[in-house]
Image (cartoon, rainbow, N blue to C red):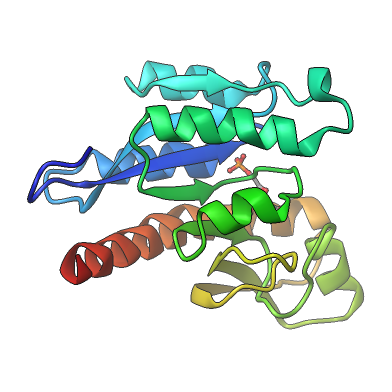
Length: 200
Ligand code: GAR
């Protein structure tokens, strides 16, 4: 558990490369950070981000969803066990590509954040960059929000817009948005954790 005056204990859930996760770890290792990443957990044992986290000195866990088949509840129970063992206070989803059931969402109500690559409420779900380009939008961006049962619907904590420029493809736009995510997410998580420390 957190010591009085200590940093908020954050677990980060990933499914892939984990570049946002790396940005969260780095910011949490600053001297005045209000949080520390105590666990990086993936549903994919092969996720590249797991090795990145280990190299940064952070504990990792993999809870492969495949052996659980359709039993999402059992998979989430195994995740919950890892989160509790690590003394987690706040969960940050960072490219975690599994839909959550009401069990895990309810267990972390008000304490689970997600980053999404669009300016919500525009473009919840997948293929956000292609949809923004098809719509002819002048800007795209990213959003950090609290996780609720509706997909990408929870209260918005912070957003960052980025311009769409002539010639953009979904790939070039995704990279520009991802760069913005790496600034937005650590800032939003730090603000959230500072508020949490003040309120406890
Ligand atoms: C990020 O762009 C994140 O916003 C997105 O996946 C990418 C993960 O990259 N998340 C979603 O689409 C969630 N619906 P990362 O693994 O390098 O952080």
